[in-house]
Image (cartoon, rainbow, N blue to C red):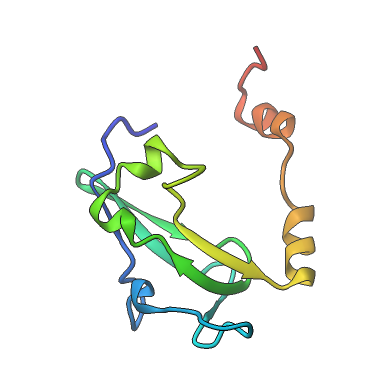
Length: 116
């Protein structure tokens, strides 16, 4: 567990910055297709950085540019304003990824966390 505050989010992880990509229209023109192991961004916590990966193959529709100026939102509001990106996986890729996910109980069991 890292006790350091999140100090930055960097979407510049490839040949072009993920923050510059804008998908438009019904067919999501200009959207970038990413693999499951592709890096979405780097999250900085003091001197340490973490690579955040897609985890599922899909199309990158939008990144949260607000995190560049307000990185603390990742920790304070992860379910709303602190989202990192919006991805659109293909249905067959999503079903494959969904089958590999753990339930809350399975996760706690693997981590050795009591359910109290």
